[in-house]
Image 1 (tube, rainbow, N blue to C red):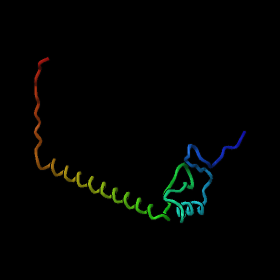
Image 2 (cartoon, helix red, strand yellow):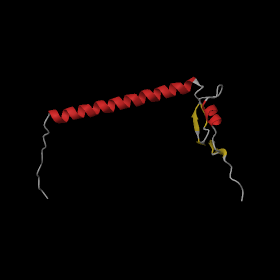
Image 3 (tube, rainbow, N blue to C red):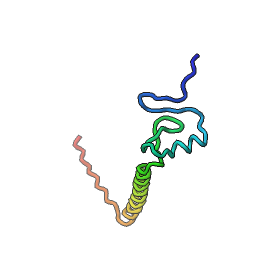
Image 4 (cartoon, rainbow, N blue to C red):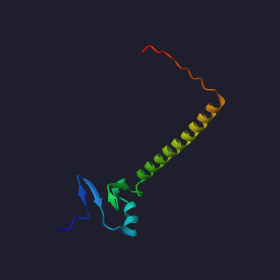
Length: 99
């Protein structure tokens, strides 16, 4: 029976299922001179190269969007609670029995 390869490419997407070492993990996220995306040290696909300034822009934008979402959800929950306890709710039932 042939051994299956533990790293390679499928349809242009890299994969690597070799047992990761600490050195390989650290060096894969910091590659000066490389592009913004580098191959993952373990698994399928790409990850951010933290030695590239564009990666930090992506991290900051993602963090800002997450912060904005969390604050807007908490504000919406507070507004919803304030609206429901301050004003009564009117329910209108239309009883047309034309059947």
